[in-house]
Length: 121
Image (cartoon, rainbow, N blue to C red; front, side, top):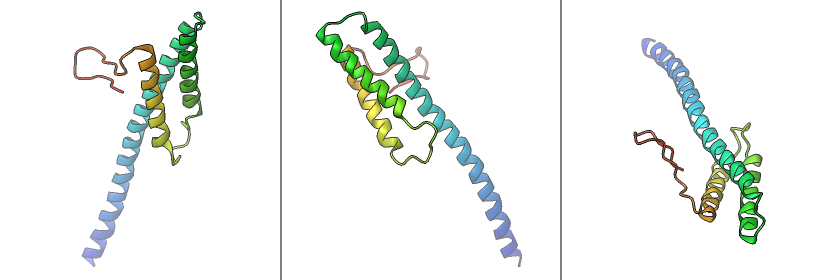
């Protein structure tokens, strides 16, 4: 009897603790993805505005690549955590971001300060 009661209490407590830990992990992971995507969008919108003034062929290709990146980000399903292709779409956005950085001759990893905390994409 005590074994059964202990098992039930432990199972209930473990389920509750697992839910809380899962929520914390999900919120943290979601915030990281949101921060990364918003950084890409800000980058793309800024460069798009900067390149609008020049109309040569090289900048035209860069603007098309930036438009593609912006479109991919705008279609990204922020609101749907059960979206089955979330990681796949995120990898496509990362790849397009690296392609745009290459076209603009910019390093695709950003470092903030000299401390350990840094953003790398």
